[in-house]
Length: 257
Image (cartoon, rainbow, N blue to C red; front, side, top):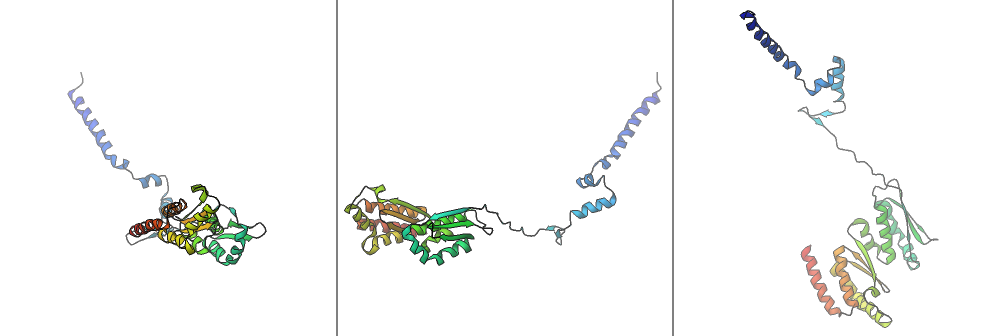
């Protein structure tokens, strides 16, 4: 049977081991920096800390100061487009060519030329083109002019994104022939174009009457209101009733804006 003193010494040894483990706990607690630089020499540790600060400006509080991000030029895929010009619009195109190509070249940064032999306007992106939709806007601008819109009206397609062109024919609304078709066109235009101008001013659109085809340039809601007025005239509504509806439309637009 062991002596009583042997039993008393064993718990003391266990407590000593516990104390040793507790003393070593502080050495086990390390931070993220020490894990990175634990295997490096003292000189290498200073280099790692200095590399993270190279090229970075610090303020008075020791916080890093970052400069403004540089604008990256978006590289646009090379594209080309040919817009056909009707024969009756070639002469007007030549007359206002000096007003057509500057916004295409300066604003959209496109390359443009008028091909007289093929009767087309050719558009192509360049290295300076920074808008992916530039060539589509340019094609819409040329197309609007070929449909009969004025240059000052068509140029709005380049500067505003919510403008559209809607085209339809009188026969799409009602089948008319001969004198009936001529009278429908006359009702839309009015005497000296007064009815057409009234519709344009009330709905803030532009309308082109090209024989039996009608082209409307404007915003989505404005085009819808102008089309309703034109359709009512085609169906035979008297101009006085259409004028009354246009006054209501004009008052609603003023309240909206």
